[in-house]
Length: 234
Length: 156
Image (cartoon, rainbow over all chains, first blue to last red; front, side, top):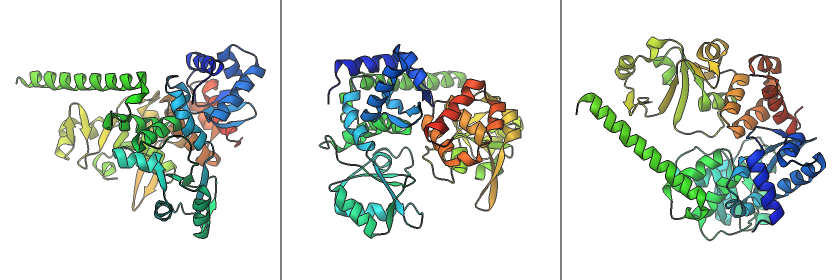
């Protein structure tokens, strides 16, 4: 997926002038874009269609922090965002999350786990709480969940996503999904990039930044070791 | 939970406090943020005697959890304020002290952890004391931003 000129301009304005906040108003967006509230509203609708808006109501909205990722990365996360924006959430009828049972049922049916559980399996970094899954057949997956006592619920922790985009490299897909979802997903993405540099090297400048951060961390680590040795008189 | 008995004046902030306020359902890493008011509780010799490890100026519990210890302030709140306003939470058969919900939300907000802010406001909206939050917020803008998170989710 490619970004058009107008979209690139919008991202440039948003990224350079919109402050990083927990919530925004239409006035904030209009000010950042240097445009009218009406134009800001149009851009908000565009951000919503792309999947960057988490929640919005009466001119107040929250954004995924992935909106601030380098523009070269944005096209790569658009399929993930599109899928995430069409998520279907399920839990057991009795209110339990029912994750383990759903994992068993869905994996047997066929498909691709992503985000929390997949990232945890790759990195062991953050504990998972939500089971995200791209079933080979969304209809079949919904059917089997319903047959086994699951109901759709906004608080569901079993989340089905429609298969959108490229799944040929599983690690890369989990990486881009993690970047797209933002928040703690960004931490997962960094952990994946650290562990699988080859598979995640396609992010251009972001990849360089992560490598530079690693180098600084290693340099500081060895400095510390040297200074503490000196202190001990080694 | 062993930390509470080893470091009596400990108050959990960060992930442990988030877990406590969200009914133990939140993502976390293997590190803990704690505030400690009584200096003697975290005196180096004492921690080493308890089996804590100090590796490159970073502390680890005997169970190998990394801990960041805050002695003066955390996210703009003094340790004394975090401790005095902390709440007790029952965990299995014991009790731990964690940062008050509204303070934790502002800490997360100031740390840029927007997904934790949304999670806490979304799940605990009915428990939030907005007057108390107003009293500890840096300014009106900060409070309005937290209210806007709730508004965006149609909670207000």
